[in-house]
Image (cartoon, rainbow, N blue to C red; front, top):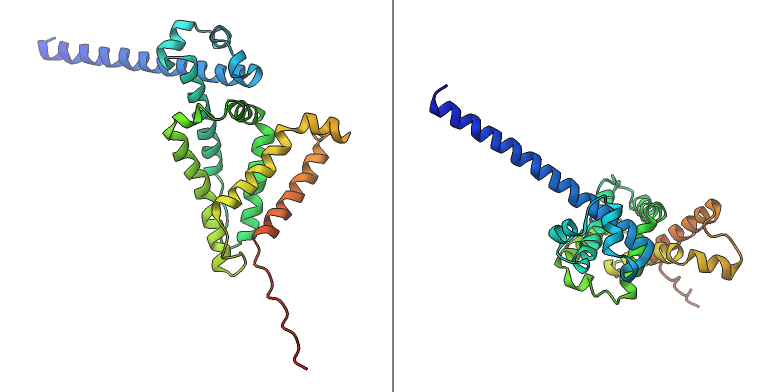
Length: 234
């Protein structure tokens, strides 16, 4: 084998090793991130110990600090990750803008069902609000992600306005907040509200009733109001 062939083979070997190491590094980082989501959702930011996260990830503290730098930075990455996961799931929706009312109902149902199926999302958002959003404020990435979320709603509203169905004075941000709050509040407070109201709000039928109610509420909130009847001249 000549020198050139030997050099080429060596380069291929180095490339394979580098690729394996990079893959292992990505897997380790992903495990730590997944573990952090579980521990923070369960124990909160203050109670979520680095040692517990490392143990859950089957890793060690040194690797956690290597990939994320600090517990605070790790929590920020968790926030960005859960929003990214939400946006990716939302981006898979195939909404028919020819029928904006139905599209809006489907979007409300998606947000509701995502919160129900991902209680860790609701828990971590609640934790961050307890800390007055101090981690979120450090992230430019979250502002980009919020823009993507509003961007799914915008064409639905604009399609409804173009068809004369939706009000022209709507603020997209207000519609977004209406949907988010109606879906979030029920899920974030269902345990205390269940005790307060004496009804099991986590029950499947209770959740279905609430989804039907808020879907109608959102639609009514954006629909064009019929013109007031003009008085009949004497």
